[in-house]
Length: 428
Image (tube, rainbow, N blue to C red; front, side, top):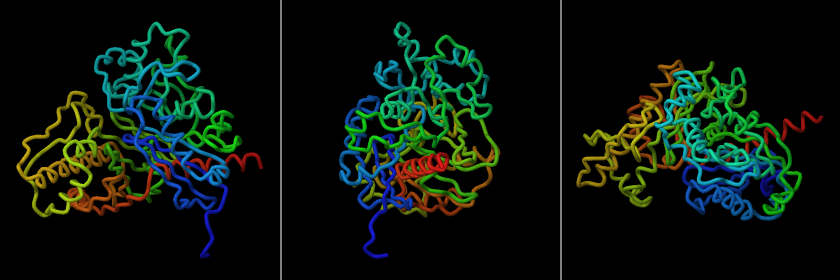
């Protein structure tokens, strides 16, 4: 009805992405609150946990106070695999290790902990980064904690760093079935550093009083266990059967629902909204494009691409040596040359290279047992580029639908609302 504004109560989603933070606010009907989505770059380098926290505070405080007082629940998603060591009171012991960092020197230690082929057995896994952190802080007393990005922020919101959300901890070795740590991970002298695992969407308790006051949120606002940024994107996109979700952000992430769990090196298998969700994340993505072009140049040059005429170049646009998916190879070298005189041709070649990585990713999932796709739904900044969409569609041979306005933060807000409603039903 005209003139009717958003209906309280509100739920809040926070996305800790690869290049910055984003906030989304939804109303009681699950619809975005107009003016309720905000974004900003990290105020500190990505690996600095203090920037995650201060960025979140700045985003939430930018909302009108009247809206903030009607927020009943919030949830946080973060980059899967970004891991840090902290004290039991949450104080970081140094920088976090980024999701894209491989630790090949930990190969022998990984082989002693998990079986070959385990998702946690890769040198690109969180478990490999955990072993590096444990070595770096071997003399730390009292014992340290190992927490992923979203879990550490969740701990700050609650005032306790006890928990870890299941999806964020798969690369650390958590097994959804049978609900325990893989191999001998749970039997190590350092196993006390691991979190107590909870399901995505679980209501964990209200905001810690001091944090609620700092954010300007009600003290009774519930903290709902979050998820990974890629899973939040899927929740936002709400794909139908036989649809895949591609997130074209700083990195390229592919996800699709499957009927049964699938495990392989470099591949993640999550349980989201009661269904199995399989996928993978490449190190390649928009981060490579921004190395060579500004956003304005990307828009201007893209318009000049003739997608019917291939560039003739075969580039592998990785930002640095090492890849996670569709191949798990920490030594894989980027191919960013030759660079032609024409910037248009070079951009086209980079976009073609990214499109090939995507096609190989979907093919990899099919080889592992995922169903063939009939359509791909695209989110992220790259979804705004019609020439890239055309190149991808030509290579994939199926329709590619773009939804650039749908954010991971919106998916986290949906998760917060679902968790809050389930909590109400449980109390009823």
